[in-house]
Image 1 (cartoon, rainbow, N blue to C red):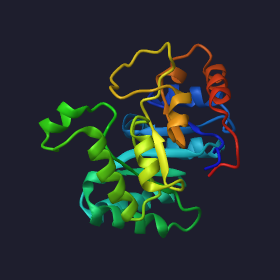
Image 2: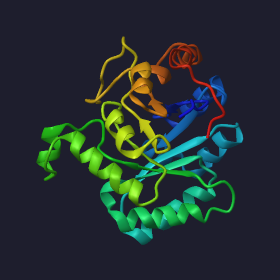
Image 3: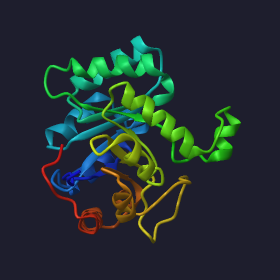
Image 4: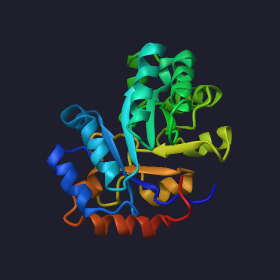
Length: 238
């Protein structure tokens, strides 16, 4: 798979004013932006529209997980905002995944990419056992990614540690979006399955979700430039 440009998705896990201020320091040519639950709850759709108006591709990271009809309605609303990518939880099951797929397929303009969350990067084997999921994390990720692919989704969100397994199972066209990316000098924070940008790309990741290493940097644009050079970001993009 050819490199996508840009491959870095900066996670705007910030207050609305801080998120907009950070976006003003970054270029749509250097990154895409992720709007998650905290920011979306605080600022709503208007902030997504402001970021899109500045030329950014927006990944709406709300991890929809509900009955199929409700998730389909949420996906239609997200597509109407003009987001570039959105996600759902693979644990919602095949009927929910297919309802989400059909909802985004009906988008009037550009159809957003639809990916499924497999296992959160904050979870390890013992966490899965505690909620009744049998087997180690990689086995669960492989099962859920297979379900997402069979349901017609574009890809999954997974740890870079599972990316080689999924690349072999799902092929080159299935998108792998990897959070839990840290620079060598950064702390793990609340992530348990983490890796560096270059290692994630080498493992098969298409897109890298990077938050605190960029958003908490004194010069976010300079850090982003280092990351992009390190991973060789380029190409036509999606």
